[in-house]
Length: 325
Image (cartoon, rainbow, N blue to C red; front, top):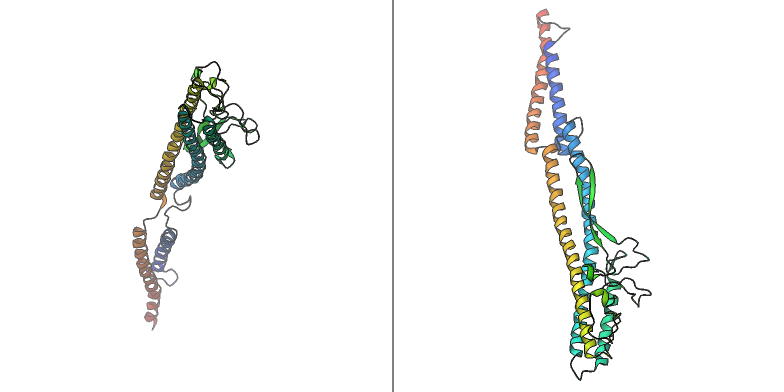
């Protein structure tokens, strides 16, 4: 039946054109944003997962910054400890040279004094952002544990936490009980005179050194040692003291080196993890631009045909006029 009041063909063509228009709007949004899931209404499950993982990636980015800060603190302490080890090596060499008969110990002591002052300078200067891991100042370091951020973890139950690596400042060595110090000095009173404690400011007994001479002062430390009036037995004790300090410094440097290595590995892992999460998010929500461009071209063609069909449906009613001529 042909009717001038109800044009069924035009209505059908218009409905088809509306559907094509909606599809084009969706496809154009995908093309312009590059995402097939840009809002929760597009795919609630994928959108939720992607939003959560983007949040985790931001946290990982913060962890990477924290790792960089932690690495700087550890590397500063490690550099200072290595520099101090080199100085102690020199002191050891000077003491060894001073054991030779006829050597002017006073002149050697002057060199040792300069090296001792250099140790203090190294200890005081090995500071990053106000933190010094080579000097334990009991007026500042109320907590001996120094921590650096090492990771961000999301558990299976959805809970999140930040993991840390701890480096405890041990200011008083007790070698007899297997406890070694890892700081050079316990405290610098006025910037010039270290108090007892630490590796270099500890007395011989604390370093596990047994004196072979009854005249040598067992409270002598690497920092206050003066070989000017030492006997041969005292020189042997002094050499043992320096060697004991050297061994503890080597252990401390090993600790710092291990932490530095772990931080480096964690930084590399964090970078890889961030990339993996980005790829995973992309697989869920990114649009395939080849597919979208093909679909857009097809929809444009369908739209043109739909417009043509609607035009034909609308013009069909005009044919009725010829029946009344």
